[in-house]
Amino acid sequence: MSDERPLPWWYSGNESTNTNESTNASESTNASESTVDWLGLLSGAVRMVDWAAGAVLEPHAAHDDPTEHPDCLVCRTLALVSDRAGLVPPTQDDATAAPEPAEPIRWITVRD
Amino acid sequence: MSRVIWLAGSSDELARSLAASTHRALLDAGVEVALVDASAAAGRSRADRAGTLDDLTSGEALLRGIAAEVAAGELGADLLVREAWAGLSCAGLPSAWRSVSHAVGRSEVVVVDGGSLERTRDLVVLPGILERAVSAFLTPRAAMWRSPSGRGHFDVLAALRDEVATWTGLIQSPSTTLRLVTAPESADAHRVVDAAALLAMHGLAVDGLAVHRYPRRREAWPPDVRVEAEAALEVLQEGAQGCAVWRSTSRMRPAPKGRQVLEQLADPGQVPAVRPGSVVLVADGEDYLLDIPLREPARRQARLGTVSHAAVVALDDTHRWWELPPVLRRCRAVDATRTPTGWQVRWTPDVTVWPSSRGTGQGDVT
Image 1 (cartoon, each protein chain N blue to C red):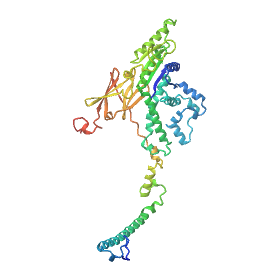
Image 2 (spheres, rainbow over the protein chains, first blue to last red; image 1 turned 90 degrees about the horizontal axis):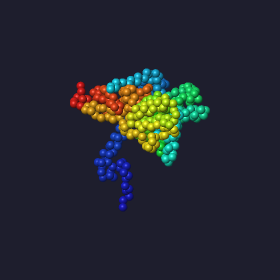
Image 3 (cartoon, chains in turn yellow, purple; image 1 turned 30 degrees about the vertical axis):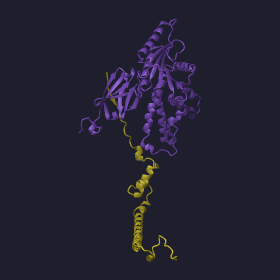
Image 4 (cartoon, chains in turn purple, brown; image 1 turned 60 degrees about the vertical axis):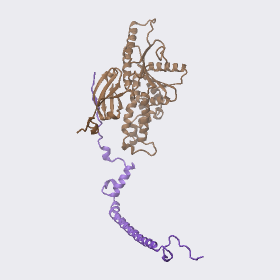
């Protein structure tokens, strides 16, 4: 009978108790590297959000009508989504645009 | 689908008499029959007793979906004086159609009193016009405005188009036939023959022509009346083109002697009418020949045209459109000739729209 209790599968701190040292060592190393990568990604994402807020959202905050700012990424997206949803009526240009003339009937002479 | 016997005459009274006698004969034969009054008189009576547009005709909803009422509703305008609008003969047309289509399928036989020739002409021409007009409104852009409730303008128009298509189907059904009656005067008989040609052009096949009331030999009618009646009968016989022709001497007879009211008085295959299946397309080498059956005088007087993917036959200010089969949409009509039964139109492949390897049937077209 041994007092030593089996380690949980997720515990990697006591390397001497495990016979498969090399495997645990490599897993431990990978885990520490993975943590560093995630932090790096997270910090990069934060920088992107900061950049987006400064370059896109702050200028957009002053835009009232999305259709008047076709260069603004947010305005263009909003206009596109609103138009697809049928929320925006046709613009004045659409309403006053001259309809295409109807195709005339091409008459054919019927011979005896 | 019910057997539909459509009746019209050179006057409202003649059509009503023929409808009543047809209805009576079918009842006597034990047939389940419905009599629908689609004449202008029915529209007037409805208008007389209606106080508001809501009580008038279901045609109001139909027309609201098309143009004026929609625009007026959107703009808050009152374009139409409703009682005056109800007095227009056209306001009763959709209502009459709905009465007919309501009866079809609920009775074994439906007898339609189509009233005068002019009234029946309006009724028969209407679905074709509406179908094209409503379809023109149903654009992809309009579809983007479809209402989630299903009661938006687009949805109303789409439902209307489907309803109108059932009217067209009823006109062109093989189980629908038209019988016309004329007064014993040659001028009226000519009008009946002309109407038969126009209505057949719109798909309503004629199977019987009658003259009423024809003077009996033993009756002392003035000689000129008798001569005129004989002339009218002769006009009908000359313009019959496969139809049955009969005369009634006292009570209106709904069918010629020895014939049953319900039977087809003419062989449907022998009666010219522009219906699905009667317009025949055959290949002739690299060309195609389209045979269009037409009655006289439509065969001589009508005009033929093409527009977009449809063929058009025009006569007496009416137009009959029908969508061309896919193969003819890649062809041009190059020649049309009159045949004993109608027209034959020659179509040749249009090299500008055929894939290059099939333009000439021989090789690439450059």
